[in-house]
Image 1 (cartoon, rainbow, N blue to C red):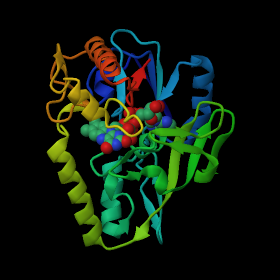
Image 2: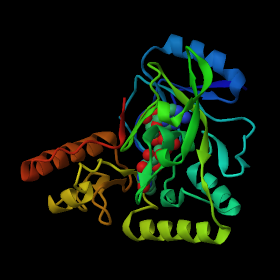
Image 3: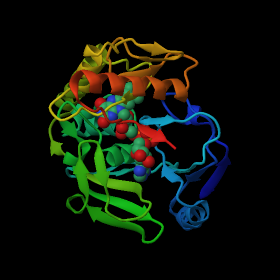
Length: 290
Ligand SMILES: Cc1cc2nc3c(=O)[nH]c(=O)nc-3n(C[C@H](O)[C@H](O)[C@H](O)COP(=O)(O)OP(=O)(O)OC[C@H]3O[C@@H](n4cnc5c(N)ncnc54)[C@H](O)[C@@H]3O)c2cc1C
């Protein structure tokens, strides 16, 4: 089916934090044929429409949410294609899957992103990054879809990229459909080793196997949000089923039975305390819905 509608989807099943109530509707686009129907869906649903990838950077509210979600879920999986050092990838492929292809092809440039669990589309929309690598550094161009223009390619240089910031400059709802990335030729062994090293470092310092949305606050310029939270006594601080991780103070984890009210209260308390202590305002990296 080109466009599948699921009513009252459970946000806790759609997000890695595993919390949240029910959205109004989820539209799953199976292929390019579903896009005309998607434009009509957006017109009908109005402004409360948001794209969702793997939901690994989202904190969804409790209860009934006035939210219409759009997710690319190809009915027949489109694959990654490689020509020389240019990699063309669908947006709904998961980043770890893309990295496996890059390892096999011996293509370097994204090893620092190992351990980020989201989709390629979500990584572009967030300009995901770690250990000094941001996905924007490899993006040559992105194939976008908007209800007004349909599908079209846009060069990376024509869009805005910043720290966990991306703006396709379309002025309307925008879906990342696919992308072309420019990598560097290396060897399978070197890329594999670098990916393993990044992942080992993350496993040693981040609660990668727990339910989280990664770093909950952005690092303020020149500061580490994790360090500020740690110094303010938030490492391990818990409320109900939600807690700032013992392992990394900037990871909010659902230890079981957590909910959005607890998550948001903990975040507010952390922001207030850090601001009082240091005068620094922490801004969420996680997307708070709705
Ligand atoms: C254990 C763990 C570790 C993490 N480590 C990191 C890290 O080191 N660095 C880092 O940057 N992040 C990290 N994250 C956060 C998260 O994985 C990234 O932000 C990821 O890129 C989000 O991808 P997603 O598909 O899950 O996006 P989602 O969470 O589904 O969405 C995130 C944003 O992207 C938009 N979006 C998603 N797909 C599309 C699309 N196709 N078109 C247009 N917009 C879209 C959404 O509307 C939303 O605004 C981590 C998360 C976890 C759980």
